[in-house]
Image 1 (cartoon, rainbow, N blue to C red):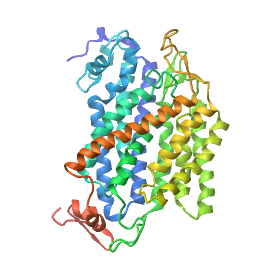
Image 2: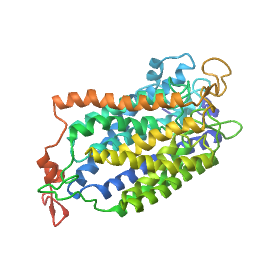
Image 3: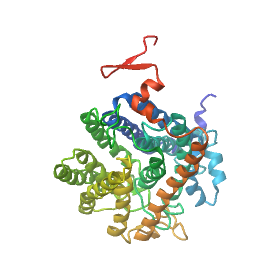
Image 4: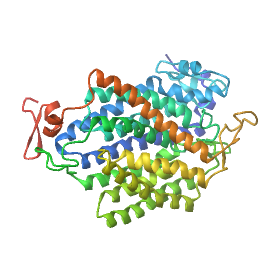
Length: 456
């Protein structure tokens, strides 16, 4: 089809709209760099005979989530904004499933009164699809080296669908939980707590890896191959997330007034500084715990715990409040980590960071920022969706935490139960001990080095 210049909708392709497009496009870059950082952490902490399998499964899990989200997931999240315009979920699906009208429209051909800012909304599909994939990568950290690949891939599809519905309820400003008062700037609930809820069910069913808690005849101990690589992955994530923060802000006139995705009053500078202080506060407390316990893992868990605890409130915390919350987060993670070790639960990332620090951060937000106005949508002055009609409160924060963990646990309980009775969940202990790479791929190990099959 040729371009008819006389039909171009100028407001859809203005310089101002392009700037916003670039802001949200940078968020997709940041999200992809987060995946790179997660793969580095995995490469630095996974037993070398399982690393090829672990890397491929995480990558495929990411792309399964990405594709399913493009297929239907975004339509669920976007429905909250359709409902305030007296449209329906069906209308949102008709527009935003993979073959939908708005998903396939060229912005310059769609009048602004039909769908303003279409380019930005389309880019947001890509942005959130990346996080649908990241949820699956995070889930894999909890079940890696012992789950069957086919079972994991099925769980990825289910996780993407349910987390998409959960994002409609818990991330935004007019969803069924966000509109009454649940506040979550960065999506801690549906991105972090949801896979942690799944792990609560899956980890006990999958059991422990050989050599993790006790010597195994073939695996005397479970050793991390490269803490330096894991630390590099940590800093890669730290460098990537500021671009994601920008994509969690809405920008309105005049020019570039920043309002958080929850419609709370904020600013770019405050959000960025809170982000930095969350890492710094967590790193300092993590360093204390690491030297106190003589365990290096807290030096890595500390800054991550501070970040996860603070992420739900980057938009509304004052910097000094953010720093205090971040200082406490590693101690919560340490308590959860110690409890899981005592109970022999082989999960050392999602439980302390998300179940522990993430829940702690959401609750502390209800303490420090109780009464902060947010919710609704800018421009709506009355009714149940009036701009900033809702307030942050401890009750709704607790409700949101339980909803996100419960959704994850229920998903794993149902889908995991079906998988157990059909294709099975767990790789045999013998195969785990021998290493999954040689079992799944035409490779072998020679003095610890991965060697491809000569036929390849």
